[in-house]
Image (cartoon, rainbow, N blue to C red; front, side, top):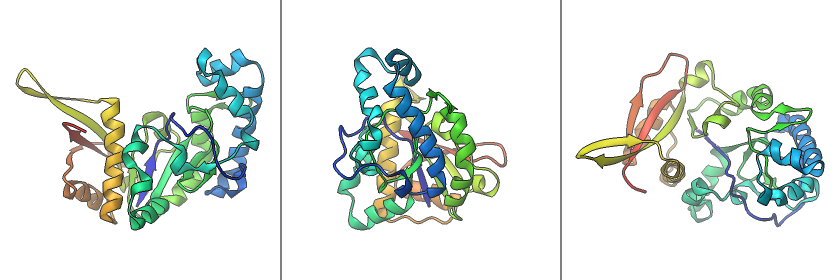
Length: 264
């Protein structure tokens, strides 16, 4: 099973290990593309501050992010699994997983990234700021750039098993499963159900969405679930006591399910 996660804006303040070496990251076929995006980001961040903040969507108070970006090639690194610290990753809590679940996570989890395309939990990267919605000089819109660069690598890494796609919309656009890969891909939307005037009302709430996705991955890994198909993956979620509602979709597209929660 391949589990696709979004990155998080929240990151550790600093790395603790060796300097960045893009050639040592997983999915080595992406090295050239990563180098191109990295060079563009470093050059942008070291140049005109106003232009860089606008391109990266940064506020006046976030100018420190530019200084950090400008030093990325010399920065200390940390495993991606420790670098990302947002709500999803807090709920997943990789460090506290049992050893077998940690090994499964290292095998199966892939994190989307505006800077790196995609990384595994063990890939050592420095803290950075490079949202997927950014436009970089010489590279253009990152979403379109990675859509061209990622397809061969992602098609290969998808293997022959099910794919659990938990990426947010902007990152999901960088690689859309096609053909038989799409047929074994399950995408998840989290809905919060509450009672309004005596009737249940369901809505998308960002915090519930992120935390539930982190908890869902944690539960799958801890249970040692190894489904062989999309049907098996959906059944596993139900076995773990998640309320799963399937949504009809067009043929040749990933399977869409809603996970309904009432509380965290």
